[in-house]
Structures are given as structure tokens and as C-alpha cells.
Image (cartoon, rainbow, N blue to C red; front, side):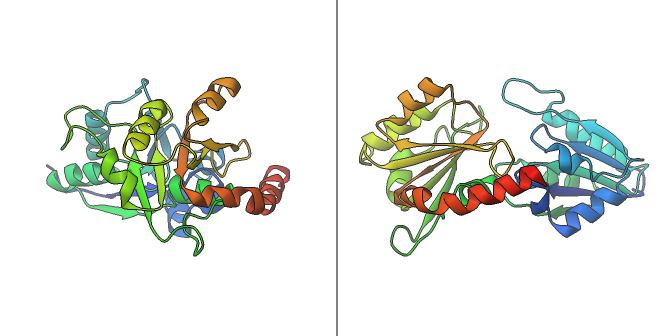
Length: 260
């Protein structure tokens, strides 16, 4: 391919609150020539983009794909040949269930200069904004992050929920709302008590954030009763009990964010 004039930056936008994007990420957005962004990137972060930059919505959401993964990679390869700063803007962190590793592999194989700029992942930020610490000396000394939505043809056929159930004291499930009944069933079959606390955090760190607190035994009915939908992460374990105490402080912070 021709000598590249620019470089691709895989930037993690964080979970939504514009204050959580890194300074490096914000600086690159302000000087970007092209930005290809995903559907879950919040409007305040998109507002940081250089007004003269070309903005392309990749629009990847469950069941709705504006661009296929191969098309996104090819677009990055094309744009970097004529632009100095090409940004691939992804929600959360590019390397945590964001396919950033796959994109970086393809770009390197194509001879494209590429750099990753980490972001704060929703599995950490959303529980924090809901008053749920993932570790706590009285509740948990270990955390497992797992995807609840798997693609066909991946390296192994299914998540080993038997192993997950016994691997740590806190389990954080990404993209698991549509499969939550199956996940809960598998965890209970693996030996977790039906009374194990679970929290669902929707639109974490954004002004519209909402939480649903229950147990493995009750959460399905609770979701149905209120019409709880994705996007959301699930936190499973004793740490969820701290929500009742710590959520008072984070509720104040979210209110200030809305007013600000």
C-alpha cells in the first residue's frame, strides 16, 4: 500500500460521562481529521470532535449494523492514506469487549501505524456510579469480567458459567441483558445461591442512568415488571448490598451532572 500520511488512534470514549474520557483522548478528538465512532458514544463526547473533521457513524448495536466490521477496518485503511489523524472512537475501553484488539491486528497487518488510547470501561464505571464497589474487604477480593453475548465462530463455543460461578466473588457481565435468564439459570446450576444479590445498571454514568436491584431468583420478574432493557451491565455478588448505603453519594453527583 502507499506510504501512509497519518496514523489511526483507537480511542476509548468511556461509558458516557464526558468527564471520564482521558485528556489524551480529548486532545486527539480536538485535532482529528476523521472520526469513525460507535453508537454508544455519548453526544457530549461527540461534541468534543474537531468541527472540521469528517465524522462517520459506524452505528454498531445489537441487530443493527450501519457498517460491518470488515468495512470499518477498510475505511480506516483508506482514510489514513490521506489524513494525518484518524480516530476510531469506541465506547468504554477498546480492548475490553470492544473488538479493538481485532481492529488493531488488521491495521498492523495492513501496515498502518496505529495506537490505542485506553478508556474507562463500563464494567468499572457503571457500578461505581451506582454505589457498588467491585471489591471491598468485607465482601469481595476478586472480580471476573465476562461477556453475556457471544458471536458465532469464536474461539470456543460458550462461556463456562460453571467455572465463572466459582472463579471470584464479584461477577460483572457485559451485554448480557438479552441472555440474562439463561445466565442466571447456569450460575444457579453451578451452585450460586438464588439469593445472591444482582444489580443491573442501565446507561451507566449518564444522566439517564437507572438501576435495578434484586437477587438471582427475582431479577427476571423485576425486569419484566418495569420493562428493563439494554444497554446495561450486571453485577453479581455480595458487593451489591453496598448499593443501599453508597448510592446516596453517587445520586447527588448524577444530579449535579444533569444540572451542570
